[in-house]
Image (cartoon, rainbow, N blue to C red; front, side):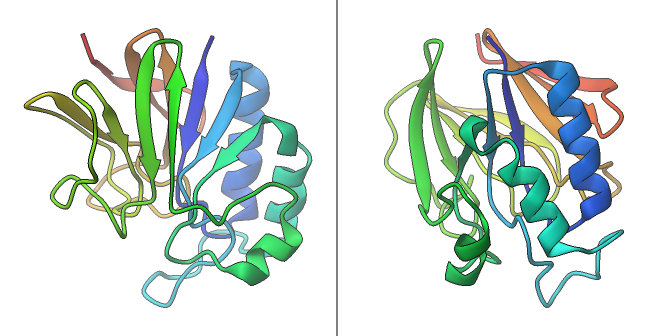
Length: 181
């Protein structure tokens, strides 16, 4: 079963709609959101079609299929309009035999790692750049940003299927993959 992973929507109704279209096409078991859902933050330009309430409505429509962690731009006011929990700093989950430590990246990241068991995949957004690195006993993966990609990257999301992560642009075209075998 597929797991869809996305981060850093930053209130873009345009890119959230693209993500919801991709969600409908991909038919994953769950959508894991790695934070920064509604607000664009003071260091980012306004994303295309900035509309926090429209983003909340689209996400709430699939609330039973969402797992989410808090980003540095997410706050208690955001939780008041979202009908699924977003205030946890991390989530530790098993997905078909793969251990995932999901966090936004402002507290823990590839350099400042949380305590993790051997074989764990550390997932975080925050940096807006699609990345995958193997470390001694664990893997680091970043899906990039759906709405404000940086360092020449494109808006993207991830699909985890089996033990392979595949990055796709916001039109659903695969452009990179990484296997944790």
